[in-house]
Image (cartoon, rainbow, N blue to C red; front, side):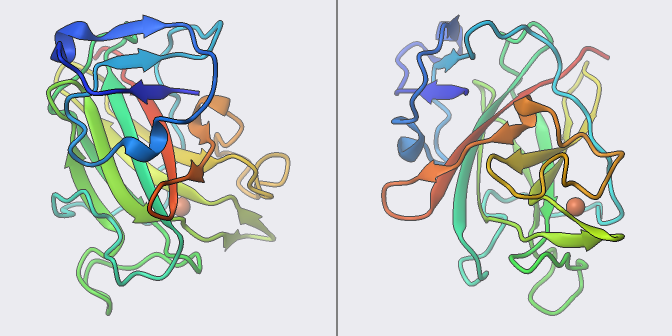
Length: 219
Ligand SMILES: [Fe+2]
């Protein structure tokens, strides 16, 4: 799994890729101000390839506000702190100013229209990556929802764009979800890609934390 390590002194210029021994001890230390993280660890034997796409689905709405707190503190559900990085197609070069358009269901599996009760653009927001490509959001674990005769695994939708790179529409899933393949009712979805199924670990101070590495292909 990806680990974003430590406080940097070298900034983006110090970005390095090294082998991974596992563990998640750094996850709880990351926060929305993590613009000075300087090192990435890839899984052993990992090959460099762009993050795979997934279906857009019917619930994207353009124009979400810029904010890292996707779920207000009044939003019911288990809190999740997600951190990550956006990299260029070489899996090394951090992409500053990439825009992540994020949307998700609430804890009961319901999506909310931008004008629905509960506040505008509930559980929607746009986040820009920092100078070293890192980004962070604060949200809740989405619920499952019905899709035809079955259920979808919990997921968060992303559209990620950066100049000179192909826009990526994808979904992020969580390890251990009972509706991951072969139980995902969406047969056209890409919920079988291990690069987009992340573990969540307890976070100091409460809630859970996870990390998601995004690689964009060249335009
Ligand atoms: Fe969805």
